[in-house]
Image 1 (cartoon, one colour):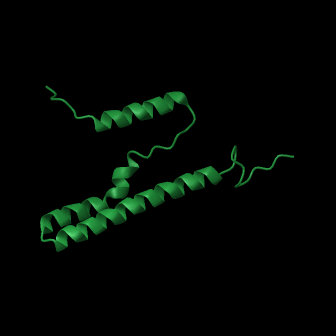
Image 2 (cartoon, rainbow, N blue to C red; image 1 turned 120 degrees about the vertical axis):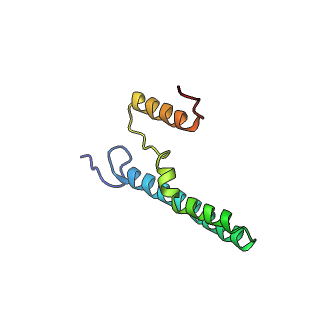
Image 3 (cartoon, rainbow, N blue to C red; image 1 turned 45 degrees about the horizontal axis):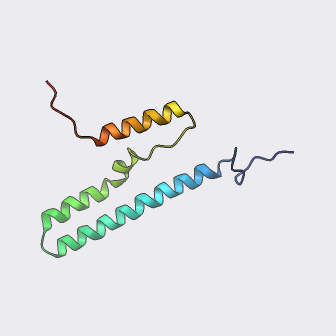
Length: 96
């Protein structure tokens, strides 16, 4: 008898929970580092830079959410997601 549960790596939901936890943990670490950098820059007398870094730190989950794409098994969808991410990173030329 096959049992499908949290620890089954083929059909279980455990890998999805781990992936979500790791994405959240990575985002939180980046956000905390940015906030510490913001405080350090502000203490050193660069108030505008400190505020700018703080705003980026608050928006970190939104920014990273664009690039953390969950793989969904289909090679065509994976290729499309990769192409979209690369296109978003490349500078855009002038459009007429």
